[in-house]
Length: 161
Image (cartoon, rainbow, N blue to C red; front, side, top):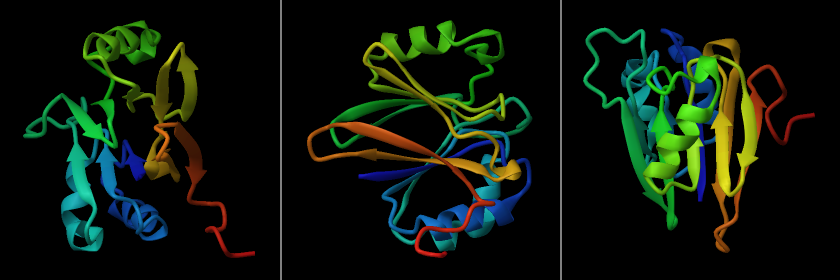
């Protein structure tokens, strides 16, 4: 299962659209806040992608939840913007929140800095700011293995050389 992860678009629906076009085979699109409504302008582009979005700290009147637990391919994915978990002060709050929800993955934004690592068996992933051209692609294999790639819209799309 392929999951496209965006965050911090801050009004840049063009970069969102480009990331979606490059990953049209993704089953899910997750937007981690601060521009989650940018997807509304390109929702028809999503085709059959399922959409998950959470509210960021710059979304004053947003209706999206502050966190969302997605169950996909037998894995539990903690989705948040990260400001409530105070990720700019470290990842202890994020890690604790994801583990309290018994999640396998913790997705966050807010810092605009890409990050992918593990803390024990918990996968931590920040796609960076799509307004800055950064995003991530996560895959859950048939064996349940979770992998992720940090991507840049400024790089040539796969298949182009």
